[in-house]
Amino acid sequence: MVLKPDSKNPFYWSYNDKSVLLIGGSVEDNLFQIANLEAHLDLLASVGGNYVRCTMSSRDEGDVWPFLPNGDGSYELTQPNPVYWEKFERLLSLAQERGIIAQIEVWDRFDFARAPWQDNPLNPRNNHAYTAEASGLKEVIETHPGRRESAFFRSVPALENNTVLLPYQHQLVDWLLEISLKYPNVLYCMDNETNESPEWGKYWATQIKQKAGAAGKTVYVTEMWDAWDLTDPQHNATLDHPELYGFVDVSQNNHNVGLNHWKNLQSVRQRILESGQLRPMNMVKIYGANTGQYGTHRDAQERLWRAVFGGVASARFHRPPHGLGLSDIAQKHIHALRQFTDAMTITQCEPHLDLIEFRSQNEAYCIANPGVEYGVFFPEGGNVRLIIDADTPVSVRWMDIRKAAWHSEASEVQPEGGKLTLETPTLEGYWAALVQYS
Image (spheres, rainbow, N blue to C red):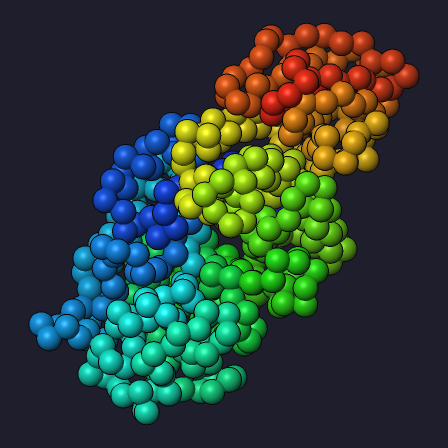
C-alpha cells in the first residue's frame, strides 16, 4: 500500500492505487491519547470517514508524555516512555486496518507555553539533562505561543544552532519515525499553526524526508501556518517550495465564511495550477461550533461542503469545543458527503462556480467534470441555473444532507438551451444535486 498524490489528478491523494477523498472528524486532535480509540475509529469508518489528525501533544488532562518518568517527578530525556509510544503505534495500526489516513503534527506549539509548559519534560525544571541557562529555555512562559517567547523553536542550525537542546529534539523525531515509517497511511505536518521562522519547519521537513529515504520510504510533508489569510506571505514557504512540501495545508482558511471562504481557497488552487507542480490541498481542521470562538455549527457544516466542492483533497471537522468533532451532526455530514462523492468520480472534477447562473452570494457552489457530471451544493436551499452546454437529457438526484440520505430516485430532466434549472426540494436546509449524463 502506498499513499501518494494521485497520478490522474495530483490535487487528490491515491491510496493503495485508488484515488481517494479524505473526510474525517474526531473528538480529539491527539487521538492516540483517548481511552476509547478503537470504538471512535469504528464510528468514523461506519459513516464513511477515513481521515484523522494526530498532534503529538500531551497537554490535556490524563495525557502521558513521550519521555520516561523518573521516580522524583522528573523525566529521563534519553529514554522513551513505552506507554506513550505504544498508544501512538496503536492508533496507526488501528487506522491502517480501517483504511484511515493519519495526518501527524510533529510539534504542537501549545505544549511549549503557559500551563502545559510547566508539565513538559523538555522544560529545564522537569529534567536533569540541562539547565535553563545551558539550554536557553525559560522555565516559565506566560504568553500565548504566538508571541514567540520560547527558544525551543529556534534551535535549528540556521537559527540559533542550540547544540544542547537539538539532540533531544532529534531523539523525539527519531522515536516517532521508528514507528510511523512502518505504516503507509501517514502524512506529516511539521507544526500546529506556527508563526515561527520558515527555517524551523524546513529543517524538520528535510530531516524527516531524508530519514524516510534512507529507510527506502517516500513520505509527504507540509507546514501549517498561523495566518488566517491564505495570501499572507507566511504561506509562501510551502506554496513556493513543492520540492520540499508535497502538499499544502489550508486549514486556517476556515476562519473565513461564505463566498470569501470559497474565493480564498480558489486563490491558492490557482497559484498551485500556475506553478505547474500540482499538489493536494489538505484541510485537517474545519472550525465552527456554537460552543467555540471561530464560527457556528452552520459555519462548520457549510465549510465542509464548500471546501470539498472547492477542490480540497481532505476535510476534517475540528475537535470540540471549536469544531463539530464526530458529533451526531458531523456524522450526518460525513455520511452524506461520502455517499454523494461515491456516486460520482470527484477526483476527476474541478471547482466550477462559473457554471452557475442567477446565484446569490452564498447560494450554491459547483464542482464538475463538464460534459460528464456536476455536483451543486446549496447551504440553505435555493434556485439556480446550471450551464451544461448541451440539450441531452441528464439525470438529477438530490442528497438530503441533514438526513444523510438520497431524497428520491434520480429523475431524467431535459435541459433547455444548454442550461438546467435546479431548485432544491425544500427552500431551506442543506442540499446537494448530482447531475450526470447517462
